[in-house]
Image (tube, rainbow, N blue to C red; front, side):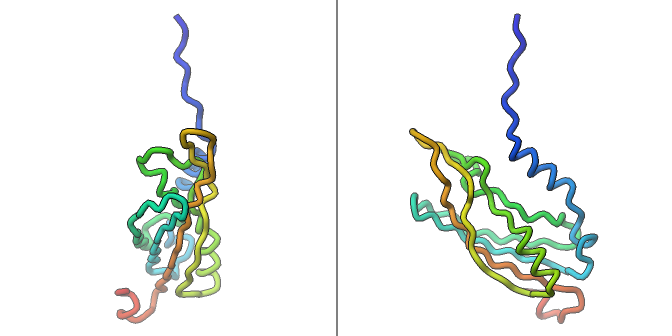
Length: 143
């Protein structure tokens, strides 16, 4: 009787998880940060699938990890592989320069498998990031 074959390990996903668990808390990495608010809107000019916007609020006790899964990796057919949106550099530059707000967009670099050949994901993330620093007025913190 032969041994069962294990499914192949997704190296891309394993590295993402390793980075997640190794990142320090926001309060350790940037003690001056009180809160981060990330607002996401998604645009897909190919499939025209409506995806709900997302708002993520991170406080000092959250991990300083800003690499987010592609929304097409969330339980739908033709999942995105090796995709996602890494905003680590954007957040790092904001905090290191004392910025309070930025916005932009990035395309998912992943691949999706349809009925034929794999194709680029092409999902676009439009983001707005706000950083609230300790010592700001109460009005600013409540945004």
